[in-house]
Length: 367
Ligand SMILES: NC(=O)c1ccc[n+]([C@@H]2O[C@H](COP(=O)([O-])OP(=O)(O)OC[C@H]3O[C@@H](n4cnc5c(N)ncnc54)[C@H](O)[C@@H]3O)[C@@H](O)[C@H]2O)c1
Ligand SMILES: CC(C)C[C@H](N)C(=O)O
Image 1 (tube, helix red, strand yellow):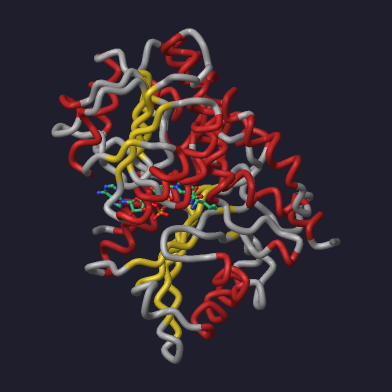
Image 2 (cartoon, rainbow, N blue to C red; image 1 turned 45 degrees about the vertical axis):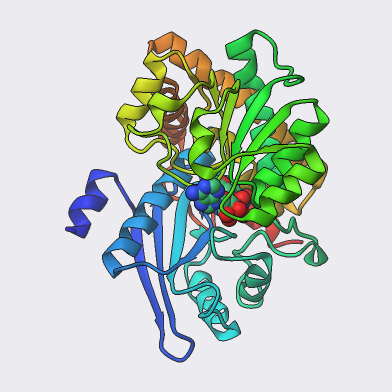
């Protein structure tokens, strides 16, 4: 991979390699765009097959956060970290302390949080070295695990998508197929069950399925069968790339609305489901509840304020549908346009993030 060529193509600002021999830390921090503010994005810990794969993931995820934060209306840019290693075996306190010092060295250009393979406990360790970390424990006056907030945002966005497809945002009696009932989808299923939806669930983890069956009266199906079940709404809440050539012909749902990142295998799959008349709630718009929640910590966490902003994911999804109609384009393209229009408008009045400028972090320092 020709790094500078790639960075130039998608206009990345910065890529950092952080190494600490004693603790085994090998981290890559990618900062995509700080037009709207400091780059906020989680830290993923994963066993990558190669350094190149890790770099690509960091870059791709960082750019995704630029779009997610912009579309969510946050005054934040996009960045992400990947740590190379097995989150079940390779974590240690010194590793996250060393990582925290590297973040501190960026002086606020990048703020981290949880992602796949990292937890609130890891963020608490990072917090010992830097203030530029969110998703830390409620004991520190913070927001804790972002998953319930993400779930609430997906629930709100799903209602907006239901209104678009069925003319009413009520989910009562709707049949909803949920792929993966992990951290986010467990809470999503609770909201859906409370509203009277009928749930069909699947997961490779049998205990997770059993819990949904017992607590929410869900019907369980095998992982390979979830795409073809008779349902109104399909909620992908496990993996990326699951809207693809193999799965699309099986789909019976009129709406796709779920928490998983990068649901479309390729952009063309967004075009295909658009042509089929499926209402697709773009992933990074509907799953922004977690980042909205952790971002509120930068103002001194206020759950009520955060929840109010997460509720607006309903409006953000409606805005996407309006742009799609205005410009006669599929919703995944409309989401990009929503984010890009906001960044471009702000770019005119603001350049790169400056720690000494007037910004949310200058308020946080005083608390
Ligand atoms: N946690 C958050 O706040 C958050 C925020 C934004 C986006 N997301 C995205 O939402 C998705 C779910 O996140 P999570 O935190 O709930 O993760 P999680 O690991 O807790 O849950 C994912 C679930 O999917 C299951 N799964 C994996 N492969 C599967 C397969 N082939 N078929 C069926 N089930 C399978 C896993 O067993 C697990 O129970 C991920 O794509 C994540 O990137 C999460
Ligand atoms: C900042 C984090 C809560 C971000 C989350 N991991 C996401 O993908 O949106």
